[in-house]
Amino acid sequence: MLDIDPGLDTRLRAFFDHIEASPPPSALTDINIAPARRRGMTNLLAGLTAVAVVVAGVTLFAVELRSHRSSPPVITSSSPPSASLLKRMPLLGNRGVPTSAQVVIPLMRGHGSVRLRTFTPQGTLLLQFDCAGPGSFKISSTNPLVGSDLSKCSTSAGVTTKTVGGSSGFEGKPGYDGTALTLSITAAPLTSWEIFVAETTTWFPEVLPVQADQQVLVPLTDGTGSSALPTFSVAPDESIRVNIFCNSGTSGKTLEIAPNPLWPDGQQVQCLVFNADGSISMVGFGPAVSQSGSGGLGPIGLQFTADPSVSWEVQITEGPDGIILPKLGNLGPVTQDVGVAPKEVGMGPEVLPTFATNQHYTIAFSCSGPGSLTVITSGVAHVATTQCGGTTGWFTPPNQVPGQPVSLSVEAPPSVGWEIEAVQVYGSTWGAGGATMP
Amino acid sequence: MPELTFEAVAVPDARRLYSLALSILRDEGEAEDAVQEALLKAWRSWDSVSRMDRPTAWLTRVCVNHCISRRRHLRSRGWPPLALIEDTASSNPVPAADLIDIDRAYRRLSFRQRAAITLNYRHGYSVDECAVFMGCRPGTVRAHLARGLVTLRKELGDA
Image (cartoon, rainbow over all chains, first blue to last red; front, side):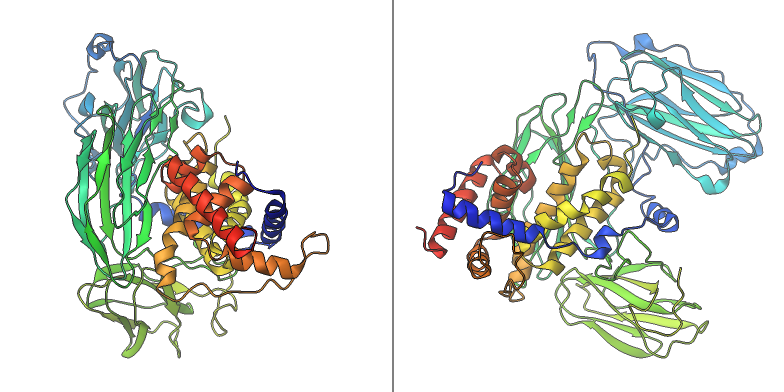
């Protein structure tokens, strides 16, 4: 604790008392999670969650996996027609199967119920499955660690993934106890399915896919121990998104980043730790976001210092922060901002798809990079911002006519990345006329 | 173990995060943005965040990181203005004029110094914990604390 003299202590204490007496804005205290919005967010992140991750704990490296596995299940040779609807697997996230992963159950296809292999998890279990057909589908294990079901398979289900928490297991059931488990599939006879299972001891959280409005400064790179990354520079008025993860197995270690223009004091990243109970400690989880300022930043050469046993991965991009609508009463980013047209992302000038809506709407945008952004709606130009800095802005086009098609285009230098979305206006916060209350 | 939902963990923590951000940034709008940013990131990554043994620690780190990283951005726009403290509770033992002096002195500190003092002095986190939240070494936190204290004493005429 800070060693401080009594006089200053009294004054500082009063000062902080005063600050903490300031009530937070209602947008922060009255957050209501709208189910429709949550689904929307989930859809937006569908690419991110294309990995099924089962944290089974890091245990017993000396145990030979193969000795715990029984013979593979019997797969029928003729599959129902719905098998053609199954997705191509394995995907396991936007990077495919991690190079560190060991295949536990190779890609298998079949239909109906079947018992899969028995094995002892040796780390983070990556589980991916899909099903198609008119009936139900359920995957489970003798150990309740694994369990998921699709009550009705359909082509819209796509590749289904599950994240099963370590010590808490699946849906509140007990976590992994270190014993062997047997996977089973229970499905209707005409339900086709496919499954792929792998595991790794160097798992990292998935990073967000790089969008069209972002530029990659350091591509997704993994390594171990100390290393120097390729040098990069950041353009003026850019937002920098840094994802750095490190994994030190069961012992807590750090990854040190030497002082550099991005972090003048350097950085210390706390590595993921796999606890004995199967849970993960991830205080150092990214991403970190910073701004390059009007002069840009660079050249930047990140120097990592870490124990050889530490594995890490890094990805650095620049681009808009994304559309976040704050300070709008109860219409914050996790409440009820409903798009009336799909969000568009890109760089430089572009003609966007025409949309029509019966709702009163506003145009929300986020942009970054050197230059200005002008949005043209139905022939009327709106200078969205003369200096992009990554933050969100918005404007409400006048004279809106319900149902009338709205053309949308963007004028910006090629170096400016942008995100634009037409968002429904609620209440009176954004002005009267046509507003529809939820 | 009950499911750690975003609504049950992150939302109730908004008030604490707001006080923390307001202490560092000394701007209500910017503090609100910082909390919104932390909540949005938590929302987007809740599958991962909810599996941490201390989700609120992660929220704290994201919020502090956002506050610290605002430095360059805000300075390029001529921020911050020096706002006066107008309302002082009668129970506060320090006169309003003195609070204004402290506020003026406090604003002379860098965001990193403010973060270190807020986390360590006000919230009681150890130097090692502060280092995790601020993404730096413990020695750097100690330096921020020492320099911040020197500045405060100098500005307040206690040096």
